[in-house]
Length: 210
Image (cartoon, rainbow, N blue to C red; front, side):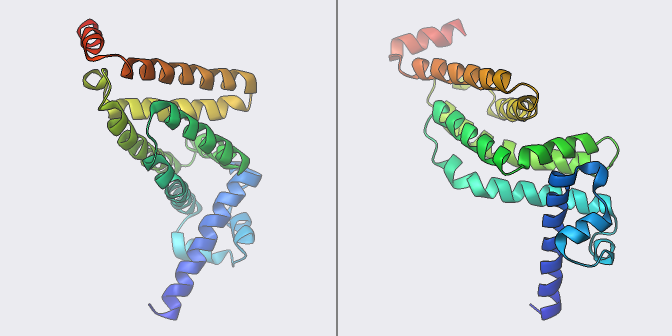
């Protein structure tokens, strides 16, 4: 790798991280080539040199942020052995991402999607990364349960992801309500765990009723 290429990659990474930081700290309305460049510590012209437009930079930053976040938790998710543990890990991720400002970032990305054409598809692509990870876990966990043949892991993964996105945004307005929603998900996990503990005859009866 030539020094020029290495430097270009370093500059692009600085701009991606600067864009995420600017969105989180200043909001979509105040995110511009100037504010991103200032956060990245580089010349403003480099925004356009490397990404063409501010919107394309923001879209790339959205994808970059999602890839980094999913990578942080991939091993943890792969080690999950039950639905209740999956929800516990989800709570941990939620708290960590909230404390790191990433929930606020998601809110800004969703708010900016209607007026920044590139943001909608990029945000959706980022969410699909999470959905793919969750789907793998659900496919593995549900395989041994009585409900396996009645549940679509891909659809359920989207529902879980959508629930957590909604809870993350809802928490800003009603923290107690968001906590109650998480507890309701815990109750569903407990119900499935109880089904797993049924004997073969009882499990067949459950399948028949479903």
